[in-house]
Length: 230
Image (cartoon, rainbow, N blue to C red; front, side, top):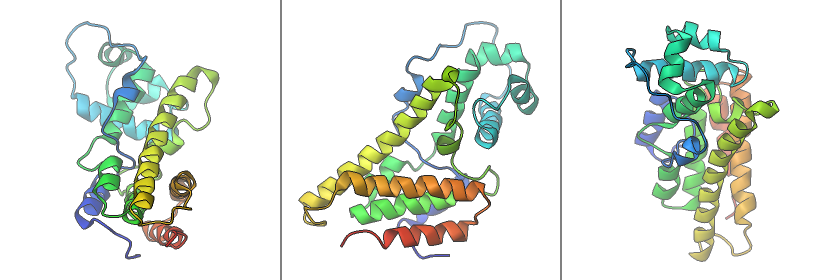
């Protein structure tokens, strides 16, 4: 294992939760999605049901996961899903919300770091932990569940993309602030540097889905940080 952990407590929380990117503003997920219809009271454990849906979408992707797959995994009937979530698309977005919930967020990692370097390193390390959870599918749900979609799911793809872009924008701002403070050279390309971190994280997700271990991803994170400007 590489010694690239910045926030040990945050790392272990992420390791236990096996989550990936977390954002605090979930309004993007709710824009333009239909509200569930009012009907008879839902009599199942919503959080447990969402967790099962999340795991299914995480493993198979949005479009490849059928309603019959969901009802079997969640232990509910199709009418129950429609009453609680409205449709499969809203269920997916609720599952993403569930996936992103947790005590540590990408925003808190970036803003809580003392330097831009620590922010980038913290994101990479947290990703290595989250992509290799023992009780969750490998990789990142945001990175793999809707990469290749039909036109019918283009809006879902755009929502996930907007979350990733928001994380990148926050990191870009942190790097720009580091440049203003003299932490980094004024010639540094903040956007390109943040893009590099995001590209490595996306690649780490693919490696995890291909079977890479947590130790391997930690090594990748450490190697990536060697390219950080001084």
